[in-house]
Each structure stands twice: as structure tokens, then as C-alpha cells.
Image (tube, rainbow, N blue to C red; front, side):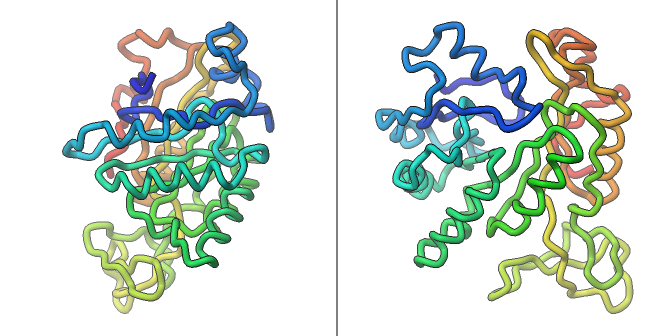
Length: 284
């Protein structure tokens, strides 16, 4: 099935399924729970589905483009996923410039190695405008481990998903800042700097001498949500508020998925509201 209830994407695409845990964020894994119910003949072992490679080619072009979550039922950069499989998936992404593909991983070191290896072999995956790379974290320790590797990974767009949120997370040192004065950039006044693979911006307050400036590499989008499903662990709303405020200050889009099943049922009208407001990923 390619349809999904995930709020920040339009479709899911699972050419590879299966995974193994890497930390506390995996304890109540939705995909593993489905596999353990016997919903898949192949269980939760790492499995390649070549018959699914062509699915995005059959999905109609839309405006805005379809946002496709790659491997929602696994981790594309799991150590048991061969480069050959990843390469075939990238080929489909290259052929589907009409869609946007989002990859989230808990193994950013392998993602970085793959992307850099391909770039060194003149296969510029990092330059694909329709491929967005991200990491999935759950607390400060995982954020401090994974996000620096993501920031060192060549990519056009970098995303962090904090879900399930199991503790407070300070992202302030990972968000964009003007290299001249430290202020947040003005996203409405930007241009691509040829040869640098980065954007030049005016800073938010148009400080004298700060335009054009190089903006230090940072995150483009942040997604956050509490845990869902049986055994969900409770998220403190102050943790979510803190990340929201950090993103607003840095003018980074913030998507709030909800408070989690330990606090409210997902069908509750206030489930996706943070202080009475829906935070849907737009620049605030």
C-alpha cells in the first residue's frame, strides 16, 4: 500500500522493508509491530522488493509535487541493505523529478558514506533537487550523535524528525545562522552560490555588512511528535514548545505531528494542536 496517514507526506514507498533496533526510539516500532502480527509473509527481515521500484513512475504528477516517504517500513541505509539496492532506488528517484522523495535514517554514518562515495565517482546524488535527506532522533543524545553527521552529508535539503520525542532536545546549534553576525537568515532574499553548494542570504535584520553572507549549514525542516500505539511513552509539552520556539527564532519550518497516544487519542480534535495552534511546517 502506498497511501498513508502520515501527515507530512502524500505517499509511502517501500522498495526495502525490515530493520533492527538502534536505541530507545525503536522500542515500540510501528513497522516491527505490523510484521509481528503476521501482516507480511517475509517478516521483519531486510527484504528487497524489486517489483515496487516502478511504483513512483506510475503516480501522477501533481502541483505541488507528491511528497514520498521512502522506506517507512525500514531503514534504507541499514547495514544489511547492499549498495546495489540503494542504487536502484536512487535511479527511480532520478527518473521521477516530478516528485519529492524524503529519506529518514537512524544510520546517518552509512548514508553519508554512500552519498560521498557516489559523489566521488561523479554520480552526484547530493545534487538531486527532489531528494531530501534526514535523520530520526528521539532525545538529546541521539540528536548530538546523528545531526552532525547529517550536516556533513552533501544534500540539497536536510530534515530532522524527532519522533517519538522521549526527552528535551536543543537544536539551536544545528539551525541556520548568519556567519557574520549570528542572526537568523532572511529566507526571502537568497541566491545559490555557484561552486559552494550553499545559499547566500541576507540576515533577518539586514545587518550592515551581512549581505551577501554565507549561512552556516543547518537544518531545513524539523518534524516532531509524541509516541503513538500500544505502550506509548509520554511526551512533555514543554519539550515540544522549546523546539518550536527554536525553529521560529531561526525561521526553520516546524511540523508538529501531535502530542502522542499517552496523552490524547489520535482522533481527539486537539491532538495536533500545540498551544491551540496547528504547526503544519510553513515558515512562521
